[in-house]
Structure formats: structure tokens, C-alpha cells
Length: 401
Ligand SMILES: Nc1ncnc2c1ncn2[C@@H]1O[C@H](COP(=O)(O)OP(=O)(O)OP(=O)(O)O)[C@@H](O)[C@H]1O
Ligand SMILES: [Mg+2]
Image 1 (cartoon, protein in one colour):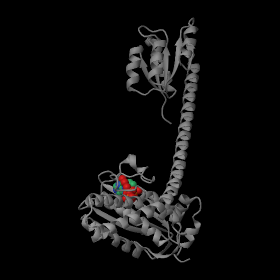
Image 2: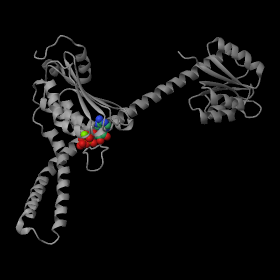
Image 3: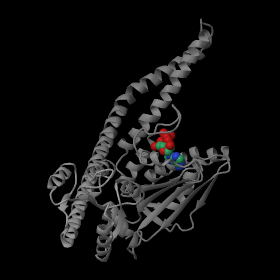
Image 4: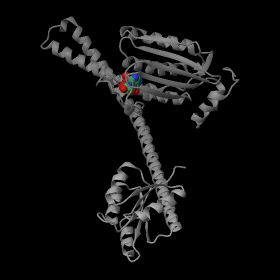
């Protein structure tokens, strides 16, 4: 337990010093001040739990010092010491926020008892505050989760509605292109302007389609199809997809797959989509000379894939937002902000989880954990986090059991 820190403020040295010694013997850490100014100077430097404050002092009165303490140090409790005939001062003090008052001459044990009571009150208030903070945080989190869930449902619904008209616009634009290309129509007024306008429509359609497809691919995805999947082959194959882009950027993609064991029981299509999203993100965050490493670690029941890059990193304030739909730091028109939202949804479906750590200027690590065996998949219930922890420690299971 930490030592309680007391401050005795009294102008009478012959009263203060012996009291200090006796309080120290009871285990308190005791500071002293001879008047209000000394009290203020000391409290600016030292943290104090309880102030035992004489009311009648030259210079600032105890009541003035009390007002200052209340204003500056809300958590510090104050016990006032009043003259025998001045109980009214004590009552005035309590009105102004003192914990209690004692009349001089002070009975020592009574003072210690009051100090302990003041400390208990302080602790109760601290606990109440912690409880209130916790409740407020939980409420905030629940609101955020609900908002996210309804935002997700809403946006996939909208994507669905937009997809059909979008297909018609696309077909009509293709038809316009066709007409523009026909020789008999080669010369007509402002043909160039017309072509430019069609080009802009095509770019916009492309962007809108990327958004709807990310969302609908996620929602319309047929039932997750679990089968025996060769993780090593799947990763190598996926890296092939993005190799060209890496070469263009002069970025090396390292495959560290030695620790990958045999097969895992999962959905290859879904894992591929997750990996493409993660590697594409890494590619967007790196510059020439950087490295992206994809590695696998497997326990008997769990497979853990890490996608690690030496790129720009993610600022702390963005880390909690990156899984939200439509959060992107890419310039307008470049990113949908759906990649990680969809990825997190897929991981949920696969009974796994995704974690991220990042340092600005040093790089980012995304880690996905997946149940590796049929048994591990069936173990996953509502308490996924607990299951994942347990799975990490269970031994002796085989992929095909
Ligand atoms: N490896 C990474 N390094 C740095 N920032 C990252 C990394 N991965 C994700 N981010 C940050 O998270 C944001 C959200 O990523 P997400 O994949 O959801 O959308 P996006 O990449 O912006 O858009 P899209 O996936 O459609 O291209 C990114 O804009 C980026 O700021
Ligand atoms: Mg992305």
C-alpha cells in the first residue's frame, strides 16, 4: 500500500512539530507549512492526500486556503482545525468543501480517525468515478458497434440497389463508345468533348462498381465452403497476383513459409481475398526498397498468417478506425475504404480473427489467426477469443481429424 501523504498547515510551530512526529509514527508521510503561502508552494510541488488546516493564521486565513485547494486540487480532502470558541468557522468550512473540522486542542486519536475517514471517502469517490468512466466507455463502445453494424447493413443494401442501374449505365456507355468508334459517325460537332465526357462517365462507373462489388462480394458470398486447403500453395499463388505491382514499385515480397505445415481446413477463396486486401494495402504503404513479408506459423490447431511491411505505418488515432466501412486515407477516387471492413467480416465468418500493430515510419503487421482443423472450426462458438487462446495451447490434433 502506498503511504498516505499529509500536509499540516499551522502557524504555531510548537503545535505542528510534535504532531508531525506522532503522525509519522502512525505511518503517515507528513509535510509542514507555516502559513497559506507555504501551503500553496508545497502543494504545487508535492501530491497531498489530506490537508490538516488551521483556520486562524496570519496572512491568508484557513478558509481562503481551503477555497484555493478546492479550486486547484479537487481530490485532496481538507480537515479544518478551529479555535475552541470558533465552531462557526468549521461549519463555514464544511459548507465550502472541507471534509470536517476539529476544535483545538485536538485529541490525537480523534484526528487520526478523521484522517482515515477522509481517506475512505476519497477512495469511495475514486471507485465511483472509475465505475462511471467504465460505464461511459462501455456505452460509447456499444453505440459505436451498433452504429458500425447498421452502417454496414445500410451500405450493403444501398450497394445492392445501385448495382442494377449501374449495370444499365455501363451498357449504355459501352454503346456510346461503339457509336463513337463507327466511321460514318466519325465527324460530328464537338466529337472530342463528347468522347471526354464518356471517358469521365466510364471512370466514375468503374469506381462505383469497385465499391458495390467489394460490399456485395462480401454479402453475396455463397455459404463459406470449407475444404482441405494447402496454405503454402495458396499464399504463393496469391502473391503471384500482386507480384507485377510490387515489381513496378521496386518492392520485394518475401515468402517465409517454412513454418507452414500441411493442410488447413478452411475456405481458400475467402483466405485469398483477405490476403489480397492485406498485401494490396501494404503495397500502397511502401515505397521503393521496402519489403513486404508474408509468413506463416502453425500450432496444432491454429494457423497464423502475418503480412508485414516496412512502409509508412498507421498513426495511432487511425488504428481504431481502419476496420470501419469507408475509412480511407487514400486520395479521393483511389480507395473505397472497404478492404479491411470486408476482411474483418470474412475473418469473422471463418471463425478467426485479425489483429494489427503499427509504428509510424517503421511499418505495419497484420496478423490473421485461423482455426486449422475441422475440430478447431467446430469448437469456435460465441466465445471466439477464448477459443482461440485455448486452441493455441491444445496439442496433439491432426488436420483431418
Ligand atoms: N499496411 C498498411 N500500412 C499503412 N496503412 C494501412 C495499411 N493497411 C491499411 N492501412 C490504412 O487503412 C485504411 C483503410 O484500408 P482499407 O483497405 O479498408 O481501405 P483502402 O485501402 O483505403 O481502400 P481500398 O481497399 O478500396 O483500396 C487505408 O486507407 C490506410 O490508411
Ligand atoms: Mg485496401
